[in-house]
Amino acid sequence: MAKKKPTARGNGKTAPVRKSKAVSPKKAAPAKTAKKARTGAAVKKVAHKAAAKKKVATLKKATAKKKVVAKKAVAVKKSAPGKVKKVVPVPKKPVKVLTKPAKALPAKTPEPRITKKSAPVVVKPTTPLPPVPKVALKLPATPKPAPIKKRALKERVVMEFYLNSSPHALYELLSTPSGFSEWYCQDVDVRGDQYTFLWDNEREETTMIGRKLGEVIRFHRNDDEDPEAYFEFRVRIDPMTNDVCLVVTDHAWPQEVEETRNLWASQIETLGRVLGA
Image (cartoon, rainbow, N blue to C red; front, side):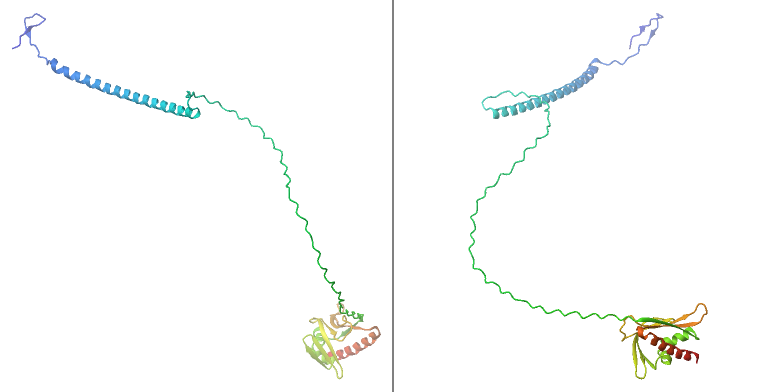
């Protein structure tokens, strides 16, 4: 049984004493020490790792310096064997490059080449060739040009005859074989442009050299000496009187002009009778 302690009030009554949960010192001490030991071990590990890293870094620097010193020593040995000198690195200074225009070199004159003189060529005399005999070439004689005949120039004879007929009927008698046989000749032989007019004991061969239907027809006599001579029949209407006019054109020598006019007048008179019948 627990003893009752007197209260501070001094009323003689004793208050009950509460039991507190006391922790024994033996149980609490090991937990704190374990925590401290763990933290101390972690700190030691970290410090140990840092020290190991520093050692590795210092070792690397030392080995690098040793390699550089060894390379420099080898270079010094190669340059001057027997004497080893410490090589002190000298800082490099920037080199100034001076650019100057290059001077043009004088052109070299080519040296004359010395050639050996060739021996003179000796030409041996040769026997002269026999002279070539001259042959006279006979050219054929050129024929003399034939004398040019003067072209005969005939006079142009133009005649007009007024007829009582229509232009179409008149042109039919002046251009067709049947029309010519009624007033100009007995018969006509036509082969293309060749017209042959026939009489009892006479024939006249002509060539038609021009024609315009309903208006004009022109012939050239094949045996005529004048190449420009022709005879022509042209049908024309008088603009004032509207009469039908036949214009006959022919060529004749000056001494035969009147005879030619009379001959055509008699021929056209026959034509007028045919038209009036």
